[in-house]
Length: 215
Image (cartoon, rainbow, N blue to C red; front, side, top):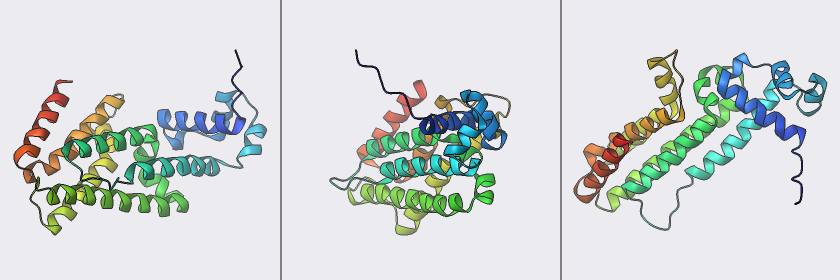
């Protein structure tokens, strides 16, 4: 059997940093902690990244690329309720993968100008995508909502997606926020559009909700 090539030190630094940031919070993890966790010298780490901000910005670049792929709504056909449910699941899974950005969001944006600029762009993209998906339901005759209502819905769904981790933490600060708890964020975001649905779409959302609540 062929041996798998060893991962490069730079890749290992980013993987280790992401895990530590997610587990302990970015402010509580230093470059020394990262080097110790990897069993490498601080000098070896500094050869690849001169400081923690460079590590942070490299991880953010990966996050931005991956989440924008999810936010790029396909235009081949109109979306239905199940499509939006799936989209939200994919979005929340991505948020969970890089959860420290969301948990430490205000602190990170205050300290890092690069993140501040690009995260605003991501938020705007989230609102545009949510608007497009809801408009698709309206055009398909599955949802009744005017332009102002659609904008409010899209914004509220973005707020839930962005701050759900903070809400979960505030509800149980000493508990462990596990990936399963993120699923409730999907449910809450979908609940925003429920009053505007009718016919088969409303029934489909109720079916998906019942199935989710049983899990």
